Length: 395
Ligand code: DIG
Ligand code: MN
Ligand code: MN
Image 1 (cartoon, protein in one colour):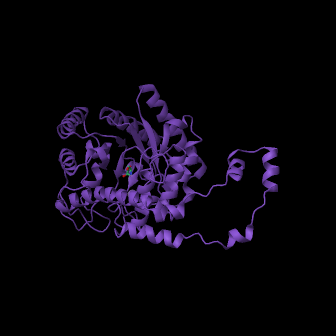
Image 2: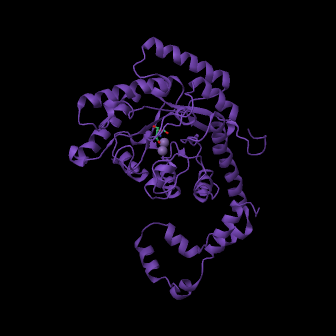
Image 3: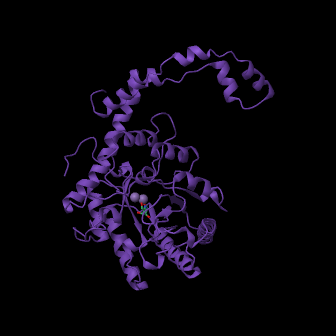
């Protein structure tokens, strides 16, 4: 494991992992597990040893499906002990509405009212568990909410059913007095041929149609927005600007592949750099202050030791990129290129909102179009500076 240095993770960094991430046994559609199944309590201890802040879970990551109430209570009691002994917290919880065969055609959007009822029942119980463990954020990832053959139902009915479910569960949380915010996680496909509400942008509009929109935000994942061919940085920027980035799933992904859930920063390092720069508020925006969750897993090639190298790698890369982004922003050569251009008269007009006077003044403004059009922006030099900071040859 790594020697202690500036980039050694500490609980103050707010790094979290799902039980299912470092607990991933390496199974894939083409081969069985390559690693032993780990107990949740061991995962808590090992993550604490690595410097993590907390651990997240689906209901079934901790409580086996169909466990008795007594078994559930025993497991929860032991897990709470492991959390206490290791100084770990549970910031986020979620429901597994995608593994059990009953959900093979969706959970909240299923055509069968019995399935939709069971999905609500399972989610309420999982919320009770998450709140009992101290979770303040509840994630919804609709892995099976989609189709292969769209003849099976109207996508409009699916949208209405999903909204009814989220509205109902907001009601349950109000009824119980739970201090819980919801974070909706988008994904364009896999395991379904198409998944409804495919990107964070779709989710942000969907939230505006809910009965209690203020309780609901988003949980964007690097891999999922990248699978959709979109800019993760732009998508979280819209969520941050809307005050809706309630949680985040960090990992690595190459476009045009299945959901790889790779170690953070292991693929598109430049996007990872820009993601950290934005989350940390380095360009001057309000920073994201929630947990930094890695929804990722080690390569199938790895043994147990490799899993913890993976976990430390996610956290170290985040901290190294933060230091590189701070150096980049402080670089006078960078500042010279990105320094905001101001024009007092025009800024007053542009920032003052609409008025007839403003419309007349803007219409009358003299703009030297040809001179502006000819001037280069210096972004080649700027991007080279970014690359050199990332490679550690500047600052
Ligand atoms: C997949 O990216 C999903 C599930 O792992 C979980 O429901 C959610 C929480 O991070 N992400
Ligand atoms: Mn994923
Ligand atoms: Mn995720």
